[in-house]
Image (cartoon, rainbow, N blue to C red):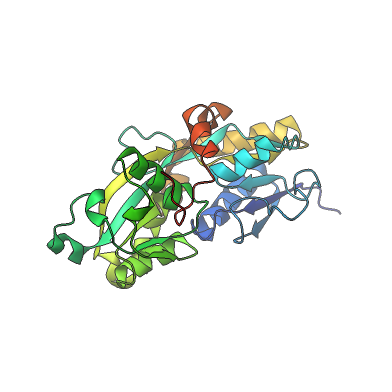
Length: 284
């Protein structure tokens, strides 16, 4: 007898910023709830579909994708009609997110030793060595540039610049004192501290910037409407299931809530319009 279960093809572009285990757990949840098979592709070279490759939605290579807000906005700007926003997004725990709203933050971190040198605010870090994952990251670089510009600063604020390649690597640079400060995706810091030396106890969050827009979940427009609705309902139902909530808690995921394109318009679109700004280029 042939097996008639359908298969859902999932890709995450969010690793290693997020642990791949989070997306394996989502995969498990969807298999159980939708009674289907799933495959998970882990693409760490880009925060979204690789720009030098055919679009995986138009070529029907993927059904469901997790990517950064900037990557989704690029897809939208390119008028990729086969990619559409699934109307749902995760909510992550954070000390600043007291109302449990979607979105995430950028945590400015330093080594605890810096406190002894009268470093109490972001502006006290003038001339210090800065570690960042990459120029395109909103949480690692763009929101830092935006915040400094609002405070009347320019590129001369930075001392040395160290491109780490990932948020976790930036945190490790601060911990080992290779860098004096970094801006880290708050969801990375929450989950990854336990993997750092001594539990990362010497890392201090100096300030928090944000919030930044919600993480988009993008679906292939060719999927039947019923399957899109089933995926949405499966994730929304997390908050009502004690066992699944327990499984997601170590990753800081509280629940999934409704999302829409409005979250990526307005002020967020203006921030994206300034994407040409680079850490190593004067922007005043």
